[in-house]
Length: 451
Image (cartoon, rainbow, N blue to C red; front, side, top):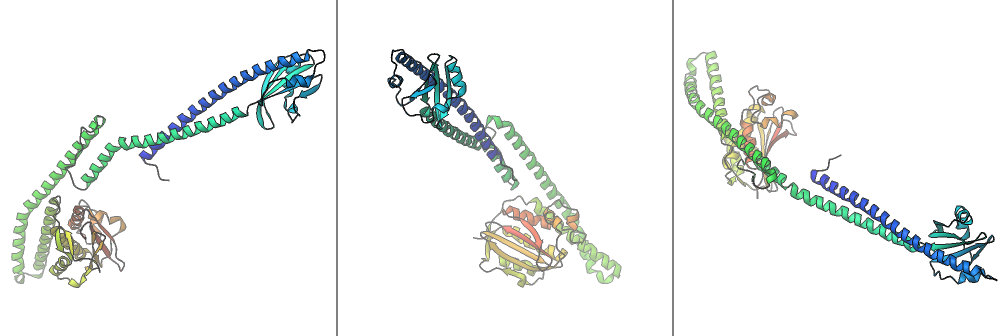
């Protein structure tokens, strides 16, 4: 299960907290209001019941008491219903509709014993308040007051408090979202700065005075970027200095090797073979030095211009005595791309050299576009690239197993590292996969190069 993001978790926490707080307040408010209204209603019903009981007692204290007339003399309205238990008989102003059996036995016993009592019960599934008042040893007065309106009030109150709780929870979620949006804005700035730095813009810095609470973070981040930029600059200067220092002895060695090559006919077979191997290694060493110098200059900005990419690819093949027919331009793909000519030319050169040296030769150079992204693919007939080494071969610092993935023993050099650097300078990337017919397929994407 995917974990929720920080903003979602904080928003959910605000919402749950607001819901718990509002629900607690709603329950407390509901219970207090309910008790207050019930107590007030009970006092009102008791006063009315005692008054009506006094009226009935006065009506019964006559020479010829009329029980029904005494009950009809009560002003109870529609909310109260009087009952009289006299000499074991029940009397009411109206027909008994199941009211008498609803009077609890315990309440009857208390009233019969001379104790007034009050209890809330349900009659015909409606809430009522029952009050019992003893009149004499043989007479007891009961009054049933309806609580229907009070129950409806409680229902409306519960709905209102529930709605308020939901609204408060929603407000809490909105507040949490707003708080996280503004609270995480400095982190968003840090993430954006980190992305620009990863893309090679080492001039990116955070404003230290944006938020006083984040001054330490901004200062530490800027110091880290300064140290990283200085270290990378030192590495580049070191690589450039070493390359320049190596050029002079290499030129001397190359001149000596050319002298030996011109006098090959005067050498025995073993000496001629050794001289050829020395000349080949010097050429390779010179290429490595040139690649190292290009890596040292890889931070220079991209100079985009309109380039006939198909013609550039055919020229790269022609310079290596490869058939120009292997260059394939997909239908609908324009010949001219907006790229850095020098960088793309070196991408083509290095990919073709890599295919010749480690992949038994290139078989196709395909140019096509995916939207505004130009794509260059170079296929070879080699043994392919192991899955574990496909990302490592583009790392400029790799010198281990990935550097020997073709089995040649001398590694990929810096050529593929340069390919990755030039692709990244255009905002793209370099990757390798299996060629359907066997071998490897090297792919370079150049966003924004095809309009």
